[in-house]
Amino acid sequence: MSAPVRIGNCSGFYGDRFSAMREMLDGGELDYLTGDYLAELTMLILGRDRLKDPNLGYAKTFLRQAEDCLGLALDKGVRIVTNAGGLNPAGLASALRELARRIGVDAAIAHVEGDDLLGRVDELGFTADPAPLTANAYLGAWGIARCLEAGADVVVTGRVTDASVIVGPAAAHFGWARDDFDALAGAVVAGHVIECGTQATGGNYAFFTEIADLDRPGFPIAEIAADGSSTITKHPGTGGAVTVGTVTAQLLYEVTGGRYAGPDVTARLDTARLAQDGPDRVRITGVRGEAPPPTLKVCLNTLAGFRNEAVFVLTGLDIEAKAELTRRQVEANLPVRPAELDWTLARTDHPDADTEEAASALLRCTVRDRDPNLAGRAFSSVAVEFALAGYPGFSLTAPPGNGRPYGVYTAAYVDAALVPHTAVLPDGTAAAIDPVTPTRPLDALPEPDLPQPLPPGPVRRVPLGTIAGARSGDKGGDANIGVWVRTDDQWRWLVHTLTVDAVKELLPETRPLTVTRHVLPHLRAVNFVVEGILGRGVASGARFDPQAKGLGEWLRARHLDIPDTLLEATT
Image (cartoon, rainbow, N blue to C red; front, side, top):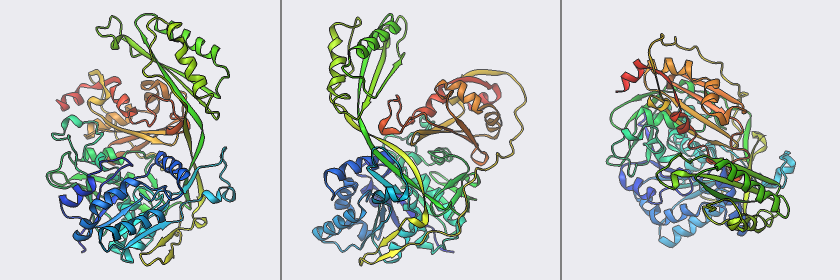
């Protein structure tokens, strides 16, 4: 039986800890080091970079990290796989070769391309107004595997699925076939756990107060076995923790139901079983895989116009009247009304408050328009001009200025056979990667059998988070909230209590929206998908929490009746 392949991750987003690459290389043994730098918003940022300079469009941070660490990685025999190529993987690969020459190391560099469909949006029927700035299909792991099989020390990709940078090394290491769906699915689950970096080792964790050392969490490692099972861990002596809870939280992050679709395999999250396997070691077993869907997801980003915002501080008495006066004054005095004008009043004020801040509410006005002036000075001037003619105590958190460009994200789907997935090997040879066959349409799973509910008994009205953890995040304009508990009795209560109706009652903002619940018994979890809560996506949103990262914590803070027996077990 082959020994597990040891894959560490050193980046969960563009802007993550710069020193993490060196920390992972210095901290212990690895076979591969991966980095995830891309997100829907990042593709928009890189698109604007490419507008300024066609030679850019990749994550420049990675190039600086490689300058510090490429020689160390080669000395240690650690191969690097990253999606930092963004919109220009060939450009980053070329920059890496120049870097290797400059620092005097011999590195075999390869890249994966074909995901960029911007030149084919009309042919493929992708509609957007104005035209998209970026259009990228989510490729899978087989191009990465082909580059590694050809001897690459570094593989740079464009837009692949987040887990693919982990699946590719595992597939190459073990020589998996394209229809080894169970093994591939296990690697996808392991990849999903570690691709967000320290979110698997205690970062953003609901029960963070239980972790002794969270000042500087270590980055995660997946030890993946030949059958696709894995152990999630981290380097010895690093901060944070790897527990069933931290891994469960990350498994629930930005997912929908039990079927987790990708270009290579559909992983059955509902089959994953977690078990603590010693300090900072969690085993993941039992993951089943199915053939992937016949289409690839495409990320479309459009520069939709300009946006601006003014936040008025309303203090003391008559908050609603002050807000109404401000709305009337601003709207009546705009020379031309912008295409979109949204008001939000956050009643953060408290009666008889002992500090001025606690006595204040925030009135936010967000405007959007394709005309930079209508979203810029034409709005900003009106917001400021009433400083001496408005409500008593007028102040702004900061003076509004010029409008800033904003983008809109939309998802599209394309037949996988229409996307040219290409591995450009270290010798410059281009190898075509065929689409995966067979495929299977993606269907929702039926709801599983539910356990018997707890018998009636005394209850106390306390926050849901007293016993339940949560992790939430964004997918375009939608958000997910994964909620889990830690004992079988808590699960019997949670699955019968936290229904769609209950969530809509606890989170009034969701009441007019479509909310779908997915049940994951092996994880003792329910996952809710809230459609449209983020409008047209992160870059365009005016919501207080535009990426829905705090949505789960809001739900945990809401009070409901919890059986005494469950509360006593937590004390």
